[in-house]
Image (cartoon, rainbow, N blue to C red; front, side):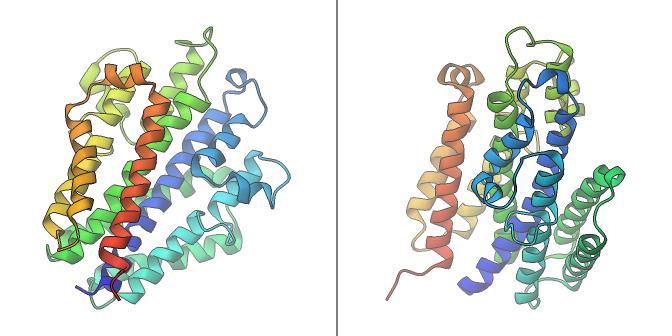
Length: 315
């Protein structure tokens, strides 16, 4: 496979997943913002959203205040924000257009129709009472795209690079969603275990479609350590860090290549730490510190994937 083709496939999948996960993070932030009694500082939850997305500087350069209206527009429809849902869907469609000969017609049709609808939504805007419906639509289109990919595509390197992009992006975003609640929105000691704290942890679980899974596994009151255990270490939880790294590590081994030794080593090490680590060790280290380290290593792994497979350093 040409490196340029692999590059487009990988980033097509990452862009689709990014659009979905941005919708998930905005949804949890929107829900948390309703709990005014649990937030001492005005707009703290929206600042948290920008901080965890790494977009606070871009936002502050163009918007006066991190309120709900400004952040929602910036992260959904702002054409000048490369991390907005609008631009993520545009990037997915453009990458798909560049490799139409490598994907199925059904895959192209769903991505093209998603972009056309996204363009229409940007023109008319999102109604104030339609925010939740918009987020659900973004998630449904992402699910539809992955389902069609899984149901129509040959299991070759095209499929592997698409899946690699999906799971690397998903691992990054699960870590960010967990960190935004645990570190930035951590309640005061008097609020721990209270109604607002319970609702926030429930919102975190729902944002990654894990609320029912939590109930099935633990059958008990929601606690931070158990939520972290589910979203970090459970291999049977589809959006957990371990489940994502199981797939990333397996896919990299299948793709392989003459220059992939260091990539496989780093991926294998991160995978092994999740496979054999315990949640008690992570809390002893500091959950925020652990998640920050994980995000740095995922970012580094992404860079190494680029230099190994897409950006040739050969003369």
